[in-house]
Image (cartoon, rainbow over all chains, first blue to last red; front, side, top):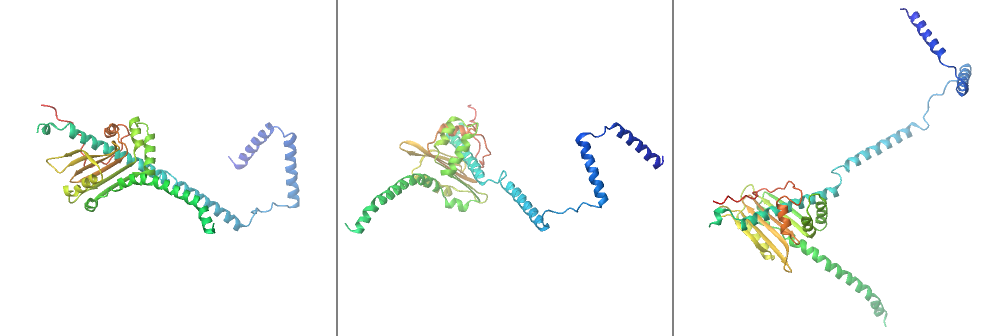
Length: 128
Length: 202
């Protein structure tokens, strides 16, 4: 199939689609007419859109970007610092708790051993 | 009345107030410091010099309060253990481990002497006839009430001294020793053989 035939087929499809689409009415029609008129005037007078310009000097933009980056970095570092092991008070408390439990369990187990040795000696010594 | 006399008269209430505050502070501090001193005296230079590894735990004052509060919040803590924890005034541990030259009886003797000198009374003393292992429990009484307990265990590889200051509930301590009362933690009880079941009667 040649390109011309393909284009004509595409055009036919587009025309059919446009026929099905209802024409704009009311506000939409007015807006489209206004856009078309503005575009025609601009094209007639040779008016072109001005190039995009930043609302502030480039140096200031870079300064703001740098500041934002530094703040983000600080926030991330602070978040890492106050993670599970970042709170020194909590760690000291948890450590004290573990040490207390350990020492009491040690004392308790030794107290049981001493009790057993004193009041319930093994048979081999009980007969002495 | 001279100026100096007037000034002295005016200064008298302030001085008296300062003296009262100092006296109050002085009266409050020694009790706390005294309790700590009783535990801080747990220093044994001979053992420390000879040991390859030394473990020291000092829990008193704020650190002990925090530890008691956290431990008391745990789910499995029984009421008697919670009561026992509440009365604790100081908990100290010294563990000396020996990898090279073993600990001898002469090394451990200063521990027992020091405790006896400080008014600790031996409650239970056990010693293995076949080896240099020993286990002693000392008690401390204040106004005819048990106000502290020290356990000294020694074998050639390890000497451990555990001192508990405050009213000691022996039943609660037994519960803790059996692994009840407070959640079981990974306790470093190197050198401590588990409580052996008595042999069946012949």
